[in-house]
Length: 102
Image 1 (cartoon, rainbow, N blue to C red):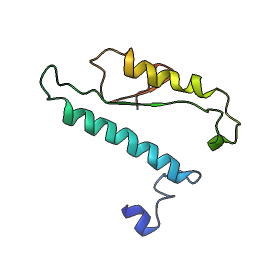
Image 2: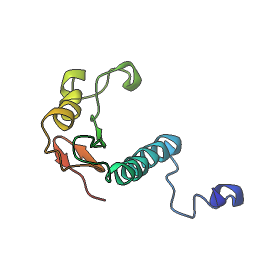
Image 3: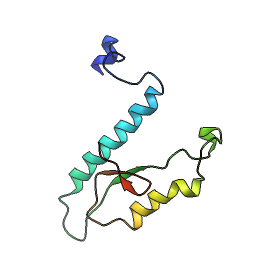
């Protein structure tokens, strides 16, 4: 926020194109990690696991139908993380059924 107030966000390395979208993705990833850490101390039987994922470039109205995969294909990783991923995974970011580390 300080770089925005000072007008130095470009020289600070923030993206110049789709800045709002990029920052929103950063916020989702940060909140996923925060929430996973906050919920990690819950007792057995009351655990909550939190992850996020990128569906890819999906053919939707948002992409002007120019995506390269269907909505069903884009949903695959979300379904996989919700139903098939090991319970010990929490606070992670996934794409195409793989953890993306950053």
